[in-house]
Image 1 (cartoon, rainbow, N blue to C red):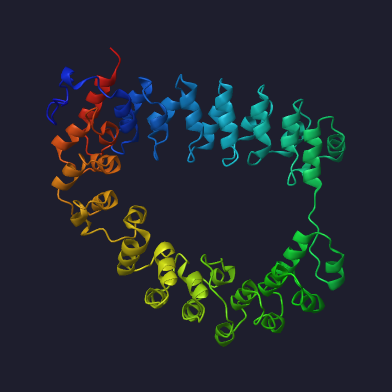
Image 2: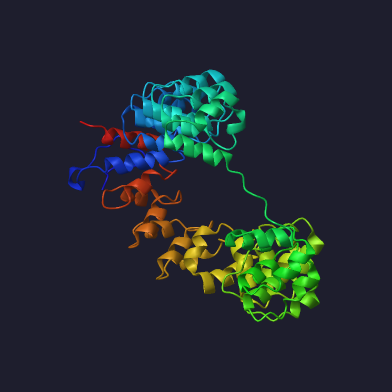
Length: 471
């Protein structure tokens, strides 16, 4: 055992316990939400797991400054990857002495607009891999884009040639790029100049179209003129008829002509059209697929409570599934769907809707999705889950830790659980009694998870760092 107590953080490591789990402690402390700036600064200064503190959701200002000046380039590069990094800090990293840090900064500058001076420095960087990343930077001035399009490195020139950047380049530069000696640059020019032809909307245009993929896309989404629609519903290929049946721009009467189509996929596409009445929808005989297809037109009605309630009572289970899959629903709609007689509708509500009732979640997760799914769903009502702490299924024992009324002896028992996932979660639980937390810090227990426990006293964190220091 550690031989440490809450009142004696300076006690020494017991030699019979074997070597201290230094790396595990440092990783845990780096991720500990209760670790103050002083602990994180020591981690950085002593070179122990330097990437951990940089990856914390929140980084105290003193730690950020220390990471910015850290002698190890890996720490500075990891700092550049933080999503909440300020433009000022990123600009400092863009001028770093290590090219790999500058590359990380150039990549991060795709989402954070750097000052013009920092962008100019990156565009003139001696490392071509860094320069290659600059054309994608936010707020890149046209003159820097033009300079990169004339760079001595072919990959940099190719990176500067994109459909959105091509019109910004001066004509004389575009002329030179078309005749560039490097095939990758010329290929980038061809991609930038490629313009997708509009899909045909007339019968003559469709007949003249030789690409089968474009024909199917036309049937599925083009604004069809009526003669073309009449042609498509009579096509010999069931894929074309199914595509046309699902095209909301196909007139309703033409779509209903496919309601008795011999192909089941065609009939299904007809039944899921937004323009049908419920009587028309119910009259289409179709077999439901295993996976519900997306219905964008249902999501477009998400702000209309009356329409959602109507669709929640649709004759078609897949329409009701599409409503149930919306993240937010009015209470009346949720009540209708939670009582739906179709299992797949209730399952869709439980999986996707943030307003799904607790009773439905218990039923669906317990019987259909399996208890492991409880762990990923914050909506599941946690009070009372402690009764699962002694269940044979590891997932249920793990779920027991989510009970806010959990007695301290439960995480103490689970910290020694035979399942490593359960033991790690219990070792990181702030309700873990002190003696159990000490035991979890041992090399043969869960030292990383225990070191990440926010209940760990700050003096004890420093003592762990002292024990971790090289001698």
